[in-house]
Length: 389
Image (cartoon, rainbow, N blue to C red; front, top):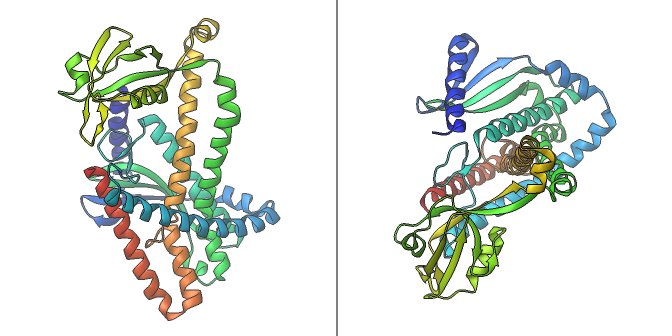
């Protein structure tokens, strides 16, 4: 087991110990207890700061709320379309795989893998920003915050950390529809905006500064047993240097050169350790295309010039921060949008429920129940198919 795997186990053990010693202050929300449940640890942490922020720049918050509500419903429409399109693709488009899955700090089929330290930092940033904006907008409308704190999704043991802010819902649901929508949409909006900020940092700061410091490197991530690459002796973790006379600096280089090869072709592969002669086979999914039987992984490595100028630590630190910014961009955007799915108690569900009851009165609750159940099933099928296909 690598260092990150050990760190993940240590994290779960420490969190479990903390919650055990603080058990008198926690509340358990049972889902499929004791297999799946939520642990809530209530505090007053950050409430005074949220109140101060809400009272400053009130005109800015006024316009932010209109923007947040509009973006919330647009995001809801976008994520609903993406979920339905993904469902259609995995059933009716050959070779399509599910684009929906759990975000986990360990590798498992069907999950989106994020290395542990990236995962824990990103989750804490996302949850803190998300819940803080719920609290700020609630205080902007002078709605009392009963508590704030930490939460954990437990699958037998506490695994996935989160945060929460608890407005006084009796007061909140007596307020005008616009105020309720603004409070519920604020969290997802803050994540989407933060994701866009990290994307801009990557595009206009990180990439220009690092383009000359790093070069692409493509390595063999997996070799299928009995495939042409396996029969030729190609090994996992070897770095691809040439395929025939084409230098491989990126995954696109490899994909493009292999696209022009036909079944039965003989190719020469040079890696960082050996030369291989490989006879390509027919692709099991499309016999007109060639098949080599490897999966590849592209990564960035410091150039020799960068190593000589900066040593080993600075390029490694910059590369690590670049990876962190990437995951903060992807996860803020993805989790922000996912929170807008019109299902049950999550932000999107609450927004749609409020809007439907406002405009459809008694029928609004029936419409919301149908939509909520529909998209809950869509999500479950999408996630289940990510483990199957």
